[in-house]
Length: 207
Image 1 (cartoon, helix red, strand yellow):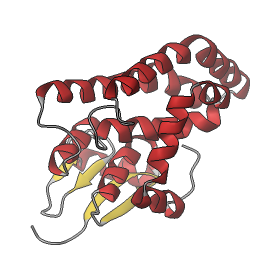
Image 2 (cartoon, helix red, strand yellow):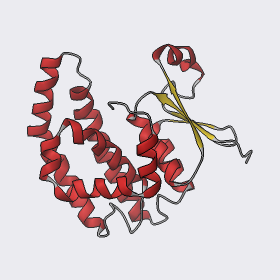
Image 3 (cartoon, rainbow, N blue to C red):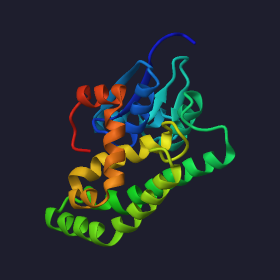
């Protein structure tokens, strides 16, 4: 190890990088939070491992790419994954549920540029799609049995769910009010000292 800080590079938003930032924060790792604009991204895209953001540079200079792969790497490194095969499956299951929700439903609605169409998309997602996803998350949280989704400690699954719930709180307040267990889970994670400090001090962005 060189002792230099890790570096997380992404756009000026929470998005796909926030789980990574929070895992590093919870692990007590110092990192450089690099936020770039479109022009900077266009200039550096071809030099990145998979031409995507976020990327993470470790303290020994290795550059990691693809947010889910990065998150699993960090989970293993900082003891937020599991050595148990079934628990690994359940962590991956919860993360895949979240990926489905974000990629198939939330992105299209929340990033729609036409405000009229955006309003209709959000209403449709909240009425037709979110109840099923929230039921799945509630089931998995209950199966965790200890206030976490898997096992008795914070894992990358908890962090990933939390970061998506942050966006859902403002976009879908009625849904969040209906699911007490999910809302209370979000509040518990937000209250963890290191995470609470990060939330207070990070740049304020809409996503």
